[in-house]
Image 1 (cartoon, rainbow, N blue to C red):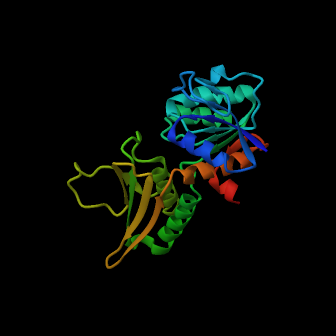
Image 2 (cartoon, one colour):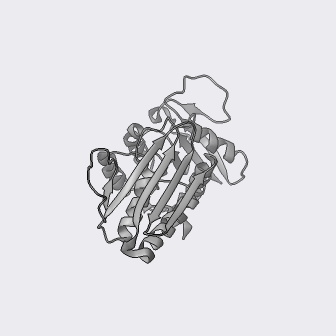
Image 3 (cartoon, rainbow, N blue to C red):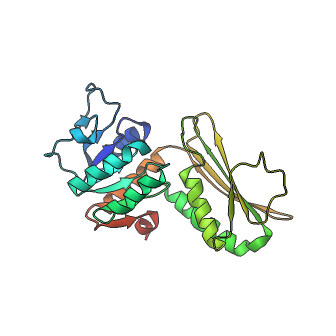
Length: 254
């Protein structure tokens, strides 16, 4: 039985995690943390307003984080103090926080993925292979769509897809996020990345290869947030007992 602490437990992803855990028999929630917790509500596990409030006698194997990028540094410090591995699902981390992630991985196991969907992992692999097979005769564009509450743009997933494409192109691609002021013809090495925010779109990602007489699209549609929660739970089970180091979706799939 894998015991988890959920950081961001009262958010939409936290609620999805709790719902899925209630339907499985190999994971249990040891406690939850959320800055929105006001001391009220009936929960099947202890809930705290901050990691500093978590009692030392509450034991867990892995932390799952779906919170806000500003909360991650304190969470990493807490995980290091407790010597517990972490599945870091929060996106939009600034550079200084990414450095803290690297430092923490020297002492604990840190699983970090721009997207917790196995399908997105497959999309990245397919897009990378397509970029190699199609060569230089196709322009490449990424279009990502998310709900109107998402803060970061482009999405971390779009940037991860771009990274895979750039690897296939030996680092020659130029990321272009906004063309409104670029009064010029599209460059051959441009990789356009467009963001759309609206409604309650869970997460759509399209990779477009536009050639002279044909267009190829590789797409992924997240139809429910449970796809990300399911991936996070799989990652938590995978990370239980793992030695210190950085892990990602590819490590888990293999």
